[in-house]
Image (tube, rainbow, N blue to C red):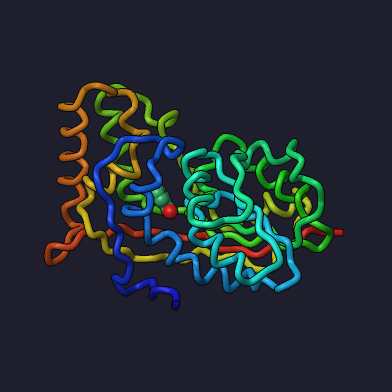
Length: 275
Ligand code: BEZ
């Protein structure tokens, strides 16, 4: 599998309606609507370069599709995710060791025992917004000295056009959007500093723009992935529809020949635990 070119519409995102939080996402919907997530994980798996004798922790493993791939390439994988439903799905498809653990809690968890050769994470760290430093500290505690932390997450300017429109729509209705924005999309310098201040040497870190074609429209994407922004209007379907239409109308230039696009920006990095 190859990395899609940043300038070519190569990613098809099958998003469909849904208003669940990430924790309550049904694994079936996840498989249907976010099947591109593991597919696009190939470059970060390559950067991890797992070895047959290694013990690896998969942080934010989702439904375990990438974990299964990882299991074939190393000695053992522990998959963790904050969603019990995702972990059930991961177990169902054959993940050998899948546990419900929130990345924020790793630091105090028995898994933080300095036994892992590497911690791997794909498309999950940006959901761990509450305390990203604590997450990094937890990862550090899981690793052996010289252990690797290799990950890809949403980075600075990720989905910025849609995010800005969602913020504007809430503000227009007298709601402060900040508490409802679930994402942490750091820049490369910011995240490198956070890693360095918490026991890591940064081997590589880069922002990668990924011009992404949707197989739905922008309203469908917001409905699936921007669910948190609709919390203040719970039960008010009319208001929700109005916001979806407003956001899509304001983003009409994101459509070309009937296909809708969003500019994703990935932050991909490899860091090594010092000492
Ligand atoms: C991402 O993978 O970058 C992403 C996924 C869902 C919502 C926002 C960003």
